[in-house]
Image (cartoon, rainbow, N blue to C red; front, side):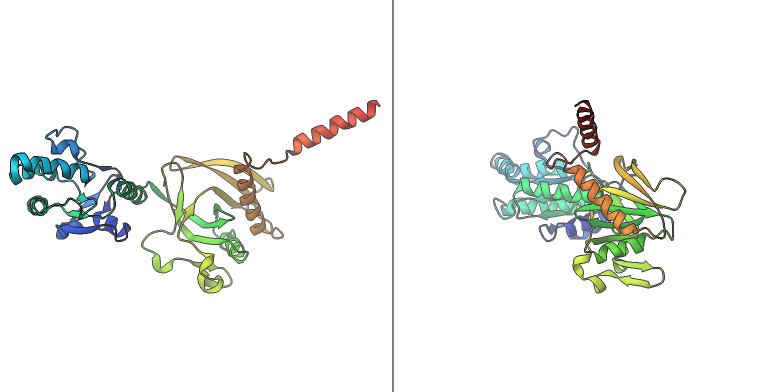
Amino acid sequence: MRIKVALSRVIDEMEGRVRTLFGGGFVKRKSVRTPYVSRPALILTGFTKEFPRDRIQVLGLTEREYLLHVKSSGGEGGVYRSLKLLFERRPPAVILARYGRKTPRYLLRVMENLSREFKIPVLATDMETAPFISTLSDRLQYLLAQRTYVHGVMVEIHGVGVLITGKAGAGKSESALELIRRGHRLIADDIVLVKRYPPTSLYAEPPPGREDLMFFMFIRGIGTVYVPHYFGVGAVRRGYELNVIVHLSDEEGDEFSGPQEVEILGIRVPKYTVRLHPLKATATVVEGMALHFKAHTLKGIIRLPDMKEILFSRLQGGRADSKT
């Protein structure tokens, strides 16, 4: 099933950089299904084939200059006919970039009439066209990203996003609480929303609709803990990239297993398994695994010593000594 997002949510995500000019009553009825944004230059000239009608359309200075040329030869009627080709295909919205510059009143009159006729919202931004399209596309990528929900605790440790998983009672929240006490940060507890955003990586955050429960943790023997109250606002953050999974297991096996790889939303993520033991400092092990992952991501910058190489060179040296 394709994900869709309400146009009103897109406007809110743009944080005041977009405002409604005409058709405000239609905004709540519209939704967006694609992260791609288009400039409708070709359709204004009459070429209507392969028009991406599901995309938000942005009119920049180039398109307005063309409409000015159309007016000089065909009057406002010519402008209406050109823009009608766009509006009658009912895109989610039409946005005027760099609003206020080369936006004559006749153009606003025509767009207001077309907005009313075809029930299409007309929006405006003061941003330049290219940066605006880049910003809007990024927000749409975020809002429309593939997503899944996982059970666990998400923390950020030394710049590494770690998802702690395991059965109920395995000590996920308790380990995360100790990590927070050491200065690391909580992203989400119990249910974690994971998105494929950007398209080549994973991003974890608290699930939507539970903002009033954000940053609460339930600790057995203690009860509910509100992390910012005990550790300050620096102990939490709204989201972070998911880099590695640490699974707490009570099954028989080696004390340490990993890393394996698991696939989430088509992205492969390293997974370490930690065997639980009553005398083991699990939080320390999780912290060490995060540092281990970070060290290996920096191995092209910082040369890591290889124990096998060191042992081999020592063995070689021992053999040389025995010959003398």
